Length: 336
Image 1 (cartoon, rainbow, N blue to C red):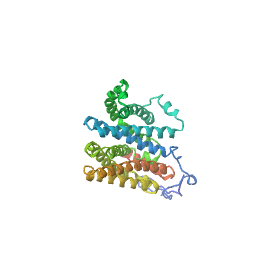
Image 2 (image 1 turned 45 degrees about the horizontal axis):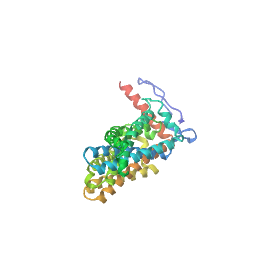
Image 3 (image 1 turned 90 degrees about the vertical axis):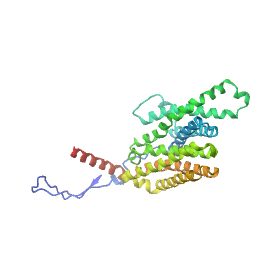
Image 4 (image 1 turned 90 degrees about the horizontal axis):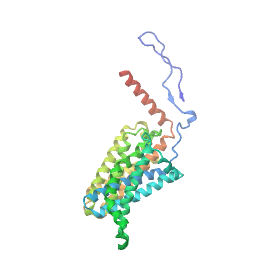
C-alpha cells in the first residue's frame, strides 16, 4: 500500500500549472504484512548446496589427479565426490518430503525449468561419480574378488566415468544458483548475475580443500591450485555481488545471515592464505587450510540461504527493487 497526501501537479510547456501538493509516496504494506511467503525449503537445501558443490569440486580434482598420475589424491577425491553425492541426494530427497517426487521430476525434461535441467544434470553426474568412487573402494576387497570380471570391468570404466563426472561438474555446482535466482525471493533474484560465479568458486574451494585435507602434500599440487583459484574467485565474486545488491545488501550484512557471511569470508580468506603460505611446506598446515576452505564454503551457502529467506519477510526488499527497475526502464525508454 502506498500512502501519500495531495499532490500538486505542474503542466508542461512552462505555462501556469497545478503544482503537486503530494509528497513522495512512502511504501508500507498492508498492516506491515510481508508481500511474499518465505520459501518452504528447510536448511537441508543449504546443506544440499554445499554437498553438491563439494561433489563437483572433488570430481574435478580427482580427474586432474588421474590424468597427472597422483593415485592418493585421485582415490581421496573420487571417494569425496561419492560421499558428497550421497549426502546431497539425501538432503535433496529428504527436503522434498516424498522421495518419489525426485523420480517424478525425471519423467519430464523441460529446458526452460532450472529445476528440471538440474535434475537431469544430477542424473548424469550421479552415476558417473558413483561409478568412479565405487571403483576406488574395491581396493579393500579380498584379492580373489578383485580379480573377478565385475571388479575388473569397474576398474576399466573408472577413468571415463571420472572424466565424465568432471565434465558435468561445472553445471552441477552452478545450476543451483540459477534455480535460486529464478525464484521471486529478492535476496536471490537480485544477485542472479553473480551468484553462479560465487557458487562455482565455493565449489572449487571446497574440492581443493578436501584434496589438501585427504591427500599427502607431495600429491596435492592440483588440489592446492584448484583451491587457490576457487577461493580467490569466490571472494572476488562475492565483493562484486555486494556492490550490485542494492537494498537487499542489508539482509546479507546484518542479522544471522550477516554473521554467517562474515565468518565465511574469514574462513575462506584464511584458507587461501594458508594454502599459499603453508600448503607446500606442512601437512598440518595444508590440512588446516583445507578445513578452513570447507568451512567457508558451507557458511557461504548457509548465508545465501538465510539472506534470501530474510528478504521475504520485509516488504521493502520486494517493492523497492521493483520500483527501481521500473524507473530504470522508463529512463531507458525516454532516451530511446
